[in-house]
Amino acid sequence: MRLYKGHGYRCLPATEHSSASGIHLEGDILKKAAEYHEHARQCRELAVRAKTAEYKAALMQMAETWDDLARNRERLAKLVSSDAISSASVVTRTRN
Image 1 (cartoon, rainbow, N blue to C red):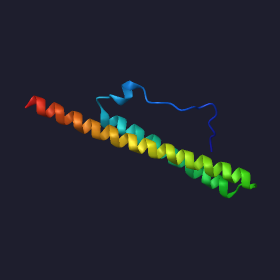
Image 2 (image 1 turned 180 degrees about the vertical axis):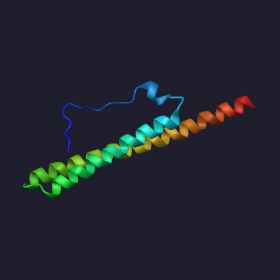
Image 3 (image 1 turned 45 degrees about the vertical axis):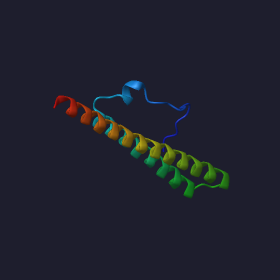
Image 4 (image 1 turned 180 degrees about the horizontal axis):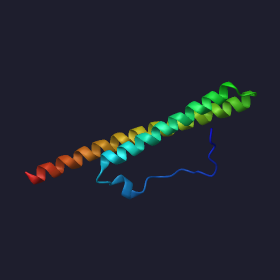
């Protein structure tokens, strides 16, 4: 398992939010969400083998944090997808 030190919260730059290729962006976001779920799984696996209750609790908290991040990414992907669909609908209506 890789531990990440020094990483704070990071928002997506405005250019990523307004991508014309919402489908590509949605896939990238979901890929990250899957990666975060994997980190959570690894933390839980380590927690099972933890030698102290304190270490186990810390690993379980890390797992929950990774899962929260993944769920946030999944919600973001849905927003990007619905935004891309709405944008495509507007373009289609204006071309007719």
